[in-house]
Every structure is written in C-alpha cells, then in structure tokens.
Image (cartoon, rainbow, N blue to C red; front, side, top):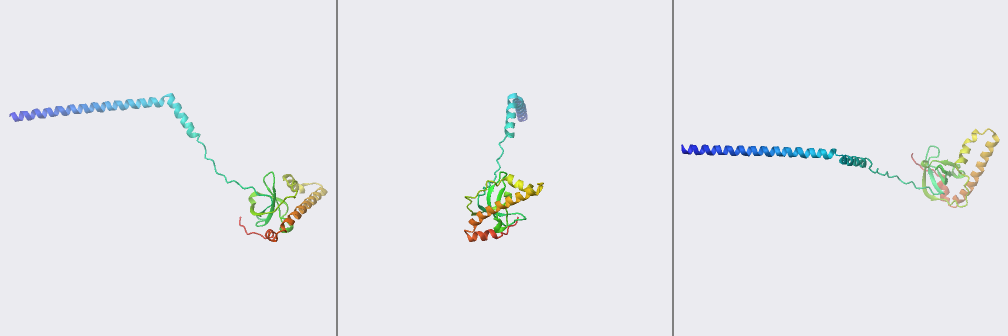
Length: 206
C-alpha cells in the first residue's frame, strides 16, 4: 500500500511539472508573437514615414534615370582627294573613277576620267563607292566651282525655257569636263598599270 501511495505522489508531481512547463512555453510563444507584431508595426511605421517615402521615391527616380549605354558607332574614314574608287550600283557597278572632292551635302564628286572609262563628271552617294589604296596627285587642279548648286543647276537644264541657255550650260560643262580629264589623263598616263586598272571592271556583288 505504501509503495502504491509513493508512486501515485510521484505521478502527480510529474503531471504538475509538465503542466507548468507547458504553461511557460505558451507564455513564451505569446510573448514572441507580441514581439513580432510589435516589430512589424514598427517596420510599417518606418516605411510609411515621410522621410522613408521620400528616400524610396528618390531611389526610384535614380533607378529610372540610369545613364543609358552609349552605342558604339563605327567611325567612317574620310575619302582622300585623288583616291581611286570602285563604284557600286546598277549603271556603273564595278567601274573605277577618281575622287575629286566632297560636296556640302556629303556627296562624292568624281570623274572617270570620261576619256578613259566613260564615267562623266558627276555626284555619287558615299554608300555607292569603295575606296582603294591607289591615289592620284591633284595639286594644281582647280575644282572650286564644283558644288551642289552647280550640279543642281545642271539637273534643271531641261526645265530652262530658252534653247540658247541650255546649249550654253551643256557646252560649258563639257569644256570643264575636258579640262579636268586632261589633267587626270596626264597623271594616269604616268603609270601604264594605273591606266589599265581604271579601264578594267571589277566584279562586285551588291
């Protein structure tokens, strides 16, 4: 009987201890929950504060105003005066000519010369030409009159009312063409291979 009583007391004692432990655990959990709620409320207050909002807005503006990446453009090399060009396009594809100067609009003013390969004094688009490493010396050649106005006026020659004006304009252009061609021919004929090169046609696919 005494043994049973002692075991019963031990059992009760253990139950009491477990109950106390469980209650303390619950209290700790409740306190943790309260703490977490408090921290969350504080965070919300901090986020909703005007200073924090101002900072976040500034960060957004900074992110939006990121410096854009600079595009790398390939720098085009300027064509040298007197360099021989290979022409592209339907009409003169593969033919060579001498580059005289740039116009203000950026067009290339070229000549065959006409007596060598049949290319007249004209303007061409930069995209329709490839520069070679061969050059001709143009010192002493007067080409100041060659500009956009000159070629635009030539284009409008058909619109001129009087026949005399048309003929004058065409004859003047032909005379100027011959003067330029004579100068270029002298330079070209100094080298037999250069004259042969200007006469030949290169095979180029557009």
